[in-house]
Image (cartoon, rainbow, N blue to C red):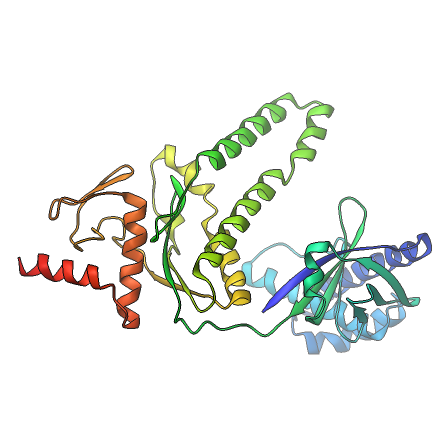
Amino acid sequence: MMKTLQTVLEETPQQRVILDDTLARMSEAQNFVVASCYEHEETNTFRMHHFTYPVLRKKFGLPAQLAVVANKYACSAVKGAVRKKGRQPVFSGRAIHYDARSSSISLEKGLASLLTPRGRVKVRFTIPKYFQKFVMWKIKESNLVRCRDRKYRLMISIEKITIKSRKTGKVVGVDRGINNIIATSDGWLHDSIHVFEIKRHYVSLRGRLQSKGTPSARRHLKKLSGKEKRFMRDVNHCLSRRLIDSAEKDGVIVLENLKGVRNVRHRRKQNWLFSNWAFYQLEQFLAYKAEESGVAVEFIPARDTSKTCSICGIRGQRHGSIFRCKACGAVLNADLNAAKNILHRYTPLTGCCQPAYCNAEKAVTSH
């Protein structure tokens, strides 16, 4: 299991000059490698190394390991651009990748030794209080990034052995939707009223500021940048944490496979809702939190989970947020009904089918 710690460097003015110079040299070197790849019509890292390495060392003054890194990532960028038939990549000089050979990092001491053209620079950094619990994890690699606020941050990738769930604990079926972001088989509903109110506020505000076009409006737009994304990330972090805690260790969270759901045609009024539905981000947050807590995340096909009665197993009718079953007469919340169907579809596959569901289905079928 991997995590990334975002730490803020406490560099001195002299160290900042060195770091600025290193980023500038690396971007120039990587852009040179990009141009060489197109000139030689070659993207293989090993073969391009023979063309570019002497120049990177002599002309740009890069240490051996940084020259290797510059060649590797430039070739990778060109390979991706060629595959996607995109434009020629341009490196802006905002980040440098460091591996175990080009850096030495101590999380306990808050100290990093980074390779530069002027030798190694030892820089102190601060770890946010929340991430202090990860200081004993194994360090893999890092990225030195100069952010928009002109501060240097060291993004440190750390690793820990994944805790695998034995799938012997509680099983929770989870339905993700538009009206209710989350509905679980044990009866928890989290509606989306507040979330979409916030999103509509940002859409309206951005529209008004863009139509103004004044310097003040542009400054306000810049300030708003990323606020909506951070809000949605916070919502999904909170939801995923509560779901993981409800399943507990060795539990299972069962989701619908929603791959390709955005490709389905919707009415014009629904397009905005579906385009602002952050279901995949929630899925990603659940996945890594589950690995950390020893919870399994499983998927079942999404077909007809909202059109089947969770009590008798017969197809019924959904009217907005209400599901009605003509066979057994059940009237249920549509999203809770779907969450229970997700649970029922998963449990027979594991040999632990819900008795009430099985008995009801047999009774209706025999009838």
